[in-house]
Image (cartoon, rainbow, N blue to C red; front, side):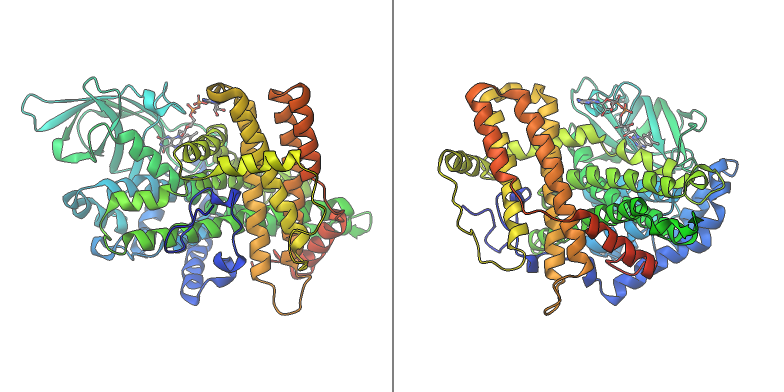
Amino acid sequence: MTVITKSGMRKGGDFLIEETPAGEIFTPEEWNEEQKMIAQSCRDFLQMEVFPKLDKLDSMEYPDLMPSLLKKCGQLGLLGTSLPEKYGGFGMDFITNLLIDEAFGSGHSFIVSYAAHTGIGTTPILYFGTEEQKSRYLPDLASGKKLAAYCLTEPDAGSDARAGRTRARLDRDRKNYILSGQKMWITNGGFADILIVFAKIDDDEDLSAFIVESDAEGIYMNEEEKKMGIKGSSTRQIYFNDCRVPVRNQLGERGKGFKMALNILNIGRIKLAAATLGGAKLALRKSIQYAGDRKQFGKTIGSFGIIKHKLGSMAARLYATESALYRTGHQIEKNLHEILEDKPEDTAARMKAIGEFAVECAILKVHGSEMGDFMVDESVQIHGGMGFSADGPVERGYRDSRINRIFEGTNEINRMVIIDMLLKKAFQGHLDLMSSALQIQKELTSIPDTRQSRDQDFLSAEKDLLANLKKTTLMIAGAAVNKLMHRLKEEQEILMHLADMVIEIYVAESGLLRAEKNLYGEEKNTPQLTLARICLYHALEIVSRSAREAIYGFSEGDEQRMLLLGLKRFTRHEPFNLKEARREIAGLMLERKGYPAEDL
Ligand SMILES: Cc1cc2nc3c(=O)[nH]c(=O)nc-3n(C[C@H](O)[C@H](O)[C@H](O)COP(=O)(O)OP(=O)(O)OC[C@H]3O[C@@H](n4cnc5c(N)ncnc54)[C@H](O)[C@@H]3O)c2cc1C
């Protein structure tokens, strides 16, 4: 069975049933000089323009400050990096744009406003606009002359965005739509000139989308929301009271707004993971520095085992997200390249290319945001009381990180989406999960093969373990589908456990592939390999726990015994000294004052 297309392209979700050769993935070690320079320009922008103003931004007493920063960014060309040159952008590739999001990711409220403008605010026009709409709006959005916001959520339509009540009806002259309704939690709402608004036309059940200019009559706003974090970003409720929107500003086809929103979210999710990576690297850097400086009991706190455990775990989680992020970004890039070669203007094809990896985008959203929260939490702990101080170096990061698990689809919704999409692909025959699950069932009833399954290169134990974690997941997914059929979607806890298994497998595999690709010559104990091994054993722990809970959750009697035996067989592993591995990484970081997989 193969899931690779004619030209060797991979399919989303195929990592569960296919081995990926290490040489096939992109790793951050491969950035070229131009890409590194762009990332450095973004970091310089934060250093010079944003960091000195964070207190002012968070006070919300200077409402012009955030838009002025975004406009400055536009003047430097940093708002249009993903837009084609003919619309005033730089036409940079997908993966370079992820690097830009990472570089801006440590920008606290700034990254949220930046991402709302360049991502969910601008991309709907780029992907779904007519030529006239693109020419009219994109150049100003690229230069920062105009700023954008995305208005999907309503008071009674959050995760269930399809339930929105905002309505649009054609005026008598049929030249304008009249928009009425209320939107909530709109980032950049306080200053955006262009609003992407989702509403239902007449009595339609499905949403449509509109480009609304915010100076139109009939638009009102509440005061700025008071928030736990990202206080410097503008978040408003927006009311549309018989607001007139020219018919030519309808975006995309009638009734296709929800599909459009989902497609935009796919991009938003992977971009959010890139941003969390930037924030996480900042938290790690500050933690390394503090652990090396702060002395208690006559020693630096970095010399204590528990602090080393924390630093080692932080670096490994970060390494996992980072490896998976750029592996996926590169796959999307390759996919875009292939599909768009003959038809560069075909937006439907563009969406399809990105949508192919929707499972991976959702995985990255969940893993990235939870990795980010883990990093800032441990960072506060390493800083002790200073971590809790509002004048200390990490308190803002702790508060600002929390939103990432909520927007771009909550992590609960994304977990459901991961399994839902995988099963859909399987049922539609796009991904042969079923044959693999059946094969594993057969394997379970046969006598275990104790011969070595592959040549004994020095990574074979890790690769075998990873392959067995995939078998565990497919075994349980197959059994759950068989037993529960259509009732499975009501058993959210089981879906959640399956999602956790899939997430950990993907990120651990990405780390391992990256370490393998970056092994030089005979050097077989690189820090990357240690990081990858920590990730793999972390995945083993999560998969084992989630699998057991899932098995208990839907099976009983002989079936349960068989599944538990399978779990035991597939999670058998060689002992690995995680304590020493984390110590080694922490020691290296304290010595180099940085994350060992790259220079910070
Ligand atoms: C600071 C901020 C900025 C935002 N910016 C924007 C923006 O620019 N544009 C925009 O349109 N929106 C924006 N949002 C809205 C954001 O996308 C929503 O808050 C999010 O989608 C969740 O919706 P909700 O808040 O209504 O929570 P709810 O949907 O009410 O969810 C509450 C809880 O129930 C869980 N839940 C809901 N449904 C299910 C289910 N089926 N199964 C299991 N659990 C479920 C959720 O995971 C969550 O834990 C922003 C929100 C915030 C806080």
